[in-house]
Image (cartoon, rainbow, N blue to C red):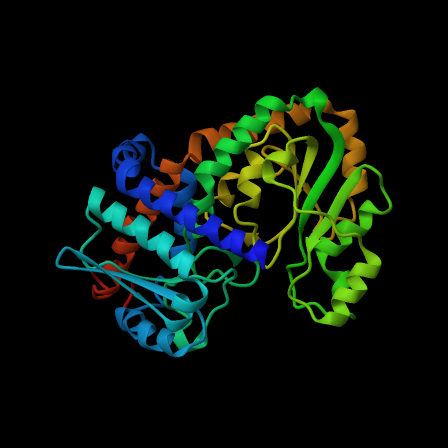
Amino acid sequence: MIHGTKRTIGRLRRLQSFLAYTRFQLPRELPEAITRQRFSWLDEQLDTDFAHFRNQSNRQVLDNCWPAAQKTSRAYLRFTVKRGALYVNATKAARMRASSRSRVLTMLMRAIHRSSLLPEGLDMIILLEDGYEPDEDLGLHAPICAFNYNASLDRRAILIPDPVTLLYWRPLHQAIQSANGRSRWEMKAPRAFWRGSTTGAVLTEANFASLPRAQLVALSQLDARIDAAFTNLTQGDEAAYRALRRTYRLSPWISPEDHVRYRYLVCADGNSSTWPGLLWRLATNSLVIKQRSDNIQWFYRALQPGVHYVEVDRQFRNLPQVLDKLYDEETPVRQIIKNANKFVEENMQMSDLCAQMYWTIQRYAREIQKLDLPDKRRGERP
């Protein structure tokens, strides 16, 4: 009860801080961030995302989305611009289950609208939930925005910055930078470190051991160089929790800045990509070890294994072998860390994230306008 109250108070304080940032600081930072660079990797990602909808969508499909969305149990948010005014609407699930995500995106959209008017006719529908699955009731060819999708299964969404990262990033990045100054490489424990919850599936006594995160934790019981543990149990039944407690040790929650005390930081997917787990790990002066995954976010296209992080297989089976190699090759490790830090410094400041949302909105508006045009004017075959 006390822990839940503290979490609620902390979230409210972060929302107040984010509101103050969007009202006072962002209007000064956003114009410069917009003109500084266009983020070529973002353009490439948007090319990929919108390619699915060309020749398959029309404006009627988009117009039919919102009435259908309101009838589903999923959390959707809608932004429209008419006669220069920004309108916001939300499904019942968005108001009840995803209110903080809705509030963050609304604050940001209003700030962008005040700083540089959003395009007339903008009509964006955003799924506020963790993963993305095409909803047949909304029309499979409707350009819905999402924070994550599985690239191997379906690309039917437009990736945008997620509200969890937007809400946490400023204070979290500052805390990581401060921790970096206190933890030189020579001082770090030479272990692969991970802490997290049992997300990734609906857990039962029969399937919990197959969870990739569980396999990572199991490895730590066999290899002293790996320090991985669950901090809390969720998304399972009581039988699964009892089995988990018997099989794995539970650990107290460890703050991101305390992770910096370890040389190797493991990034493991939960229900989808980690928000903002990968990003803050890239900002540390430790090496990121990321599992191979088809879950991607809006900035993943800019990252390369072996350049910005070290990749292991999805089930972490080859993690011990990867560590063998890392222990022998310190110079390449330092360069990968430097590349990761440079990426964050040049592309992932708070104003950059907001500028990326701005450019995505502009591109979205242009693509939606094309849906209103006859096929010949779009340069397509009738």
